[in-house]
Length: 218
Image (cartoon, rainbow, N blue to C red; front, top):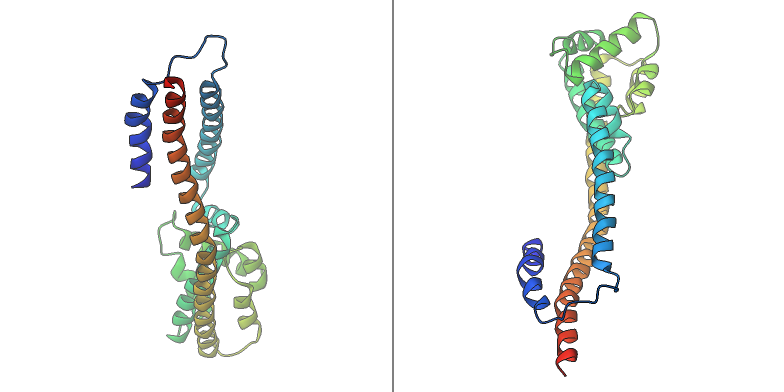
């Protein structure tokens, strides 16, 4: 609604107000044109940068994209909390149902080759084949929590490890919700400030031509 009001002021009201303002002298610098040129240059450079990011993102495999998601500022922290909940919950369910860790890796390889689950299964299987520990696998994938490797290093039974993972999934979900609540406490005042600035700027854009035209009439 606010954007529609600003658009109506810019495209409909402002041309009507400028009719009451005498044309400027040719020697006067048109600051509006200068601002438009600067904004256009900023938008063009931003568009080029965004297009490069899109091209890079399109060329990456699915696992690398999710690793990139987990390393983004602000968003990455929430993504890691969410992945910690999803991975620990599903892995705990599979272990409690009787599957071994090697069978979980074979199950992931049944998904389509372009999916992140298949690529995780391929990385995990390769790590196990060369005789590396599970911690080496979790350290390579930023969105997999290190606590998962800790549970398997205890040497407990598979079902016991699965139950521990389910408890950790509940803790991860609570962390995710608490982090979202803290973010909302910062986002709401920020949105209020942005809306207030836009409203004040709209009033200024309307009143300045009016006062200038009244002064010229007097």
